[in-house]
Amino acid sequence: MTHSSAAPGGPTGPRPGGGRTAPARTGGSGAPATGHGGPRPPLPPAGSGPAGPSGPGSRSGGLHPPLSGSGGSGALRRALATTMLADIDRLTDRAVEDIRAHSGTYASGAPVTREDLWEICRDNLLRALEDFGGLAATGGDFEWAARETGRRRAEQGVPLDTVLQAYRRGGRVLWQVMAEYLRVRAGRDSDSRDVELDMASGVWETIDRFSVAMADAYRIAQLELQSRQDTRRVALFEALLDGRADDPAVASAAAAALGVPAVDRYVVVVAAQDPAAPPHLSPVLETRGMWSYWRPRSGRYAGIVRLPRRDTPTGRATAAAPLGGTDPATRALLAALRERAGATAGVSPEFDRLSQAGRALRLAEQTLRTLPAGSGEVGVFDDRLAQVLLSGRTDIAERIVAVHLGPVLATGGERAALLTTLRAWLDHGCSASRAADQLYCHRNTVLNRIGRISELTGRSSESGEARLGWALALRALPYAGLATPTEPAAGEREPEAL
Image 1 (cartoon, rainbow, N blue to C red):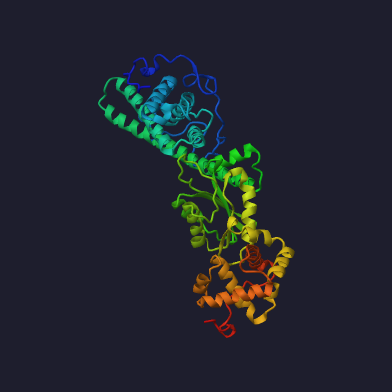
Image 2: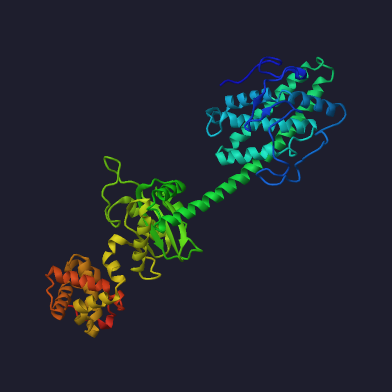
């Protein structure tokens, strides 16, 4: 659509003196749109606009003083406004064409249709001319149209700068048409330039005030929308974690509210941190290519983290590997949690549907329960399966310890050294040399201690079943109410075998 450039009195321009009016048409309300003084679409009464009661600066009802000057200038304004109001529909057409010609957003018809733009333009031009001419306000409130524009465009997501540009274009058209009328008016009087300048001052004062009213209403509506969106986002996040996303509609709504796909790579993290002092991990993770959303929950801090997809030929994630594995994204997540959270945290297994977040939350909470309180450790569910199994069954944990390590625990002075050596030996793949390096002792010392454990328990260190039992018993110690083994003090060390 092109910008109208008709000369004064042409087919699309207004006629001086209100000669011929445009054929009757309807605005957004369906009522006939005629010149000032005839029937118009009904408008809200004063103070009933969406932005609330009119402020101290707004005027409603009755006549009011002209914006500048009095006498001849005021009379000219009234005459000019009355004449232009008689041709309000063609003035609206011209403003709409100009706005659409200079704005891709409005020209596209989405989200603002041409009918919507025409209706809003007509309301604003009508009120602006009434205000400019000192005429009684239609419906009582001069600034209602500006506030309605701001509210509606904010809800439609039109950028404020785009709306303000439309106001400036509309004001430009309004002034152009006024200038056309003034040039025709009795030729060029000696004072016509001064009159035009005076009219221009009044026009732009009116447009500026309407722009401010519109922008204020836009910002208020935007804040209200943001508040509603935040409330909805929190509610849907809680629905995910509560396991209510089995309903596809809930899962879809949650994905839309959070701005992420319903199907992707996700984990849930639960941190035992004071909710009043959250770790603010979202910005940190975002720099590493990970979206996240966090909320305080049950005295802890819970978050859903979206992991980057693994590089594969198809661009899709391969079968989920344990989080403690070599995947760069998961390593980056764990590093960020350890470095920045400053709190003990449990991480769920990876899942690929937001609807599975409720189950993932339970697994992350189970992981957190296996970690010492206040330790600052980050545990991954897949790396702590044995601990998860044992943490909820104290009776089973006690029995595993008694069966596999009972005689070792009864040794008194030897106990700490034997348990510490056994843990190091198992952690290093049953290598005496590597365990000795960790313990700063001779490898023969490690072999002697492992031999002593075999003797006490009656189980061969070469047996896979024995090694599994010892490993489970070591992990079960905290859940059986027993201390984790530590290196004995110097006075308790037994002589190293040479």
